[in-house]
Image (cartoon, rainbow, N blue to C red; front, side, top):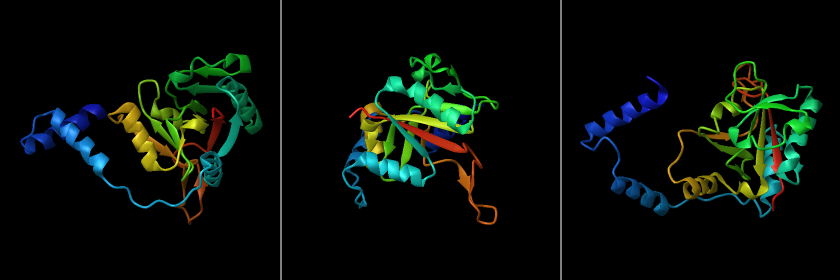
Length: 220
C-alpha cells in the first residue's frame, strides 16, 4: 500500500468510528474554512516594512547564500555562475514548471524529473518566502516534487521578491486563497539541513542538502 492509500485508509477508519461518511461533506469543509477565518492570530514581532531585506538577512543567518537577478531570463546564467563558484558540474534536475527557461544557453544540462541518488543539484521554485524567518515555502505537486529540494546535496531555489510575505501565517493564508485545499505536502525550508546530535556540534547536510542557494528575482 502506498503512502497516499495508507493515509486515506487511516482517515476512513477514523470517520467510520465517528459515524461519519467516508468522505468529508461540503458542510464539513465549509465549517473548517469558517473556523480558520474566525480564528484569531497571536502577537507577532515587528519585522519592518522592507520584507526583501529582512528575508535576505534571515536567510543568511540560516546559512543560505543569496543572489539577486533582474528578470527570470537571467536565472540560468546565475545558476551557472553559482555552480562554477562552488566547483560543481553544470548538471541538475529541476521542477517541470521551470522547463521553459533557457538553461542550455547558459551551458547547463537540466533534466526535469524527480532526483535520483546520483543527482547532486536540485533546482526548484518556491510558492513564497517568509521574511520573518528567512524560510522558503514549497508546495508539492506532480510538477513540483518535494524530493527535488531534499535529496540533492545542493538545492537552488528561485523566488520572486513579490512572493515574499511577512510571516508563516501570511504564507498559509496566501496558499488558501490561491489553492484552496492544501496539497499533500508543504515544506518550510530554513537553510541547509543540520544537526547538533554529536557533541552538540552543528553539522550541515546531515539529513538533506549541504547548501541552499536562493535566487531572488526582482519583480517589484
